[in-house]
Image (cartoon, rainbow, N blue to C red; front, side, top):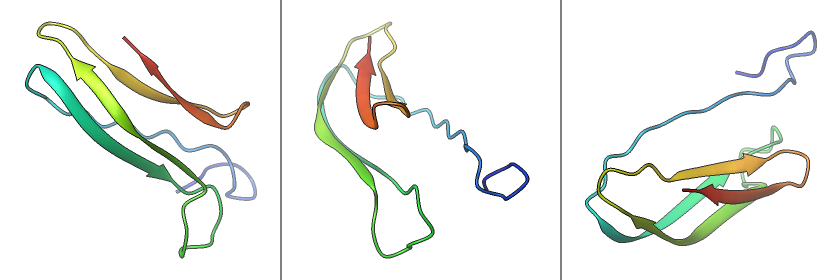
Length: 70
């Protein structure tokens, strides 16, 4: 649940997935409103997983977009 005085502050989500090396199709959706019927932002695309490396899909809250860090 969001923090803050009005309970509308930022929330932090972290989840780890162990993937086999190779290309993987992913869909990530987040909601930024109380409207449970829709998601406000989505990322759908391919990520390349390499053995021994970490790939991060992150969200830029200022520009309202997902980005990948490898």
